[in-house]
Amino acid sequence: MVATYAAVLGACAASLTVGQAAIGLCGVRRWSWLAPPVGLALLCAICWATVRLPGEGAISAAAVAVLAIGAIVFLWHRVEGVGDAAREALPVALVALLVASLPFIVEGHFGILGTGFNPDMSQHLLATDRLLDGARSQLLVEGYPLGPHAVVVALEKGLGIGLVQGFSGLTVAVAVLAPLTALTAVAGQPPLRRTAVALLVGLPYLIASFFAQGAFKETIQALFVLAFILALREASQNPAWRDLPLRFVPAALIAIGSVYVYSFPGLIWLAGITAAWVTVELAWGKRAGSATAASRPMLLASVVLLAGTLPELGRMIDFQRFETFDPSGPGLGNLFGQVSPFTALGIWFSGDFRVAAGDGAAPAFAYYLGAAFAAALLLYGLIRCARRRETAILAGVLTLAGVYLAARVGGTPYTAAKALCMAAPVLILAVLAPLVGRQARRIPEQGDLGAGRLPPGALVAYLVLAGGCSLLAFANAPVGPSSYSPELTESRPLLADSSTLVIAPSELLEEEHGARYIAWELRGGRVCIENEAEVRAAPPPGVRFVVTWERRTAAPFSGLRLRRRAGPYLLWERPRPVPGPSPCPLIAVRQARQGGQGD
Image (cartoon, rainbow, N blue to C red):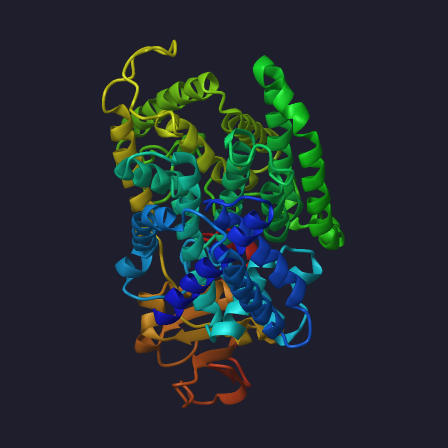
């Protein structure tokens, strides 16, 4: 627990200080809640740039420490509104931290998030372990974006935090930083409204659902998409930003971070949003001049973006051949089929977003009623955005809807689900548009927008229902083992051609969702998994290898010889297996991913 929350604190503190310093260098003198995503983006880029230097991550940790200290020195007496910002942030951060801690509270232990839903954290841990050792990995060779992994390495080297706790801490930190970022949209609102809107925009149902699977890359990228839209909004609408030559640089820095978290697909969303925003601005007669005047600042931001992403160009080219992008592949991951687009509207009465309407915690009509209610509010919110010239939000909704439709028609259910995840915070922001911005001093009750009268309390009801669905998703998150060793995965070449019996500790199987985790670690071979408290008298026929944990030093069966010690595991060999067909199932890659998201 201490290590996990130390990682949360370290990631949040570094993101806030470095991000605000970067925004300050652009000429902004008042605290901005774009600081968290800008800082996180810079951390991902800087840690990746330094993690492969000598020292296996020590330079990354030192670079982050130097930047954070330098940022504090730079900001001292230079930034205004820190006290007000702290008062705004405290309730949001505390509630977000509590909500993001629900999986650990419900499960009763800390460990790998999402095991049981998504065993893929295994390969992220392996790739990060390789970075720590200065070695190559499959993900590294394939151009997979490893910015967050490099941040975890820096946490390990700088704070002595284990990899499992580092990833958990980073994932929780993103869940705290996202609502803080959403505060950008609710400046000047009453405290209760400000807190409620920020929390729901930052942690809508689909974000909570991907969090529950340990899908840290998706939650980070969704934060960057939301922050990019808000950065465009600040640059065009905030009087303190509007005349700054570098006002679009924060958006460019967020885009740089997106490359190191999500590679070239991350830029697709942001480039589309930019194009749509410029188009909408030019299409509005009154604001046409503002888009034209923004050409030079946007050119400066483009130079920054190019300089920050050019070092990753070769890896982005390699990554486009990654198996996820094969439209002829199965494309399901852990999904049961296409995910309903209504999940992105925040009201879905199930702890598992993959289930169809009626298969969760409520009858089917309740799902459709909730979806219709949210859709009506979305329509009202979009009209509200149009009347108030919220061009960045409108551009975001249009672009993200287009990306989802393209993924739904020409992609796979897996890519379509990710597109919905990216869209969710922005759609919720549009739903809550009547509560957003300095002009929204009260919930409108009259139909002066041409959309009819908004029933009193409708938005309050939405906040309650959508917030409850998010809590349900958080509470349903499984938590897996609290430690990690790459040795089991590294044993696969030896075990792959034979049947293997794994005798696992009871708590690992019964409390930490260990069966699916072990199956994923040993994918590609025939594997039986048994509870050490229920070991049979002899291994099944055909089993050649037996794996036990090091605390059990004696052979579990007679006739076994110790083949090797592999970290916390003991690998035993049966020289003369009993003839007969093995009852152990073949753990193919796709089979291992059932219940796991894939990547």
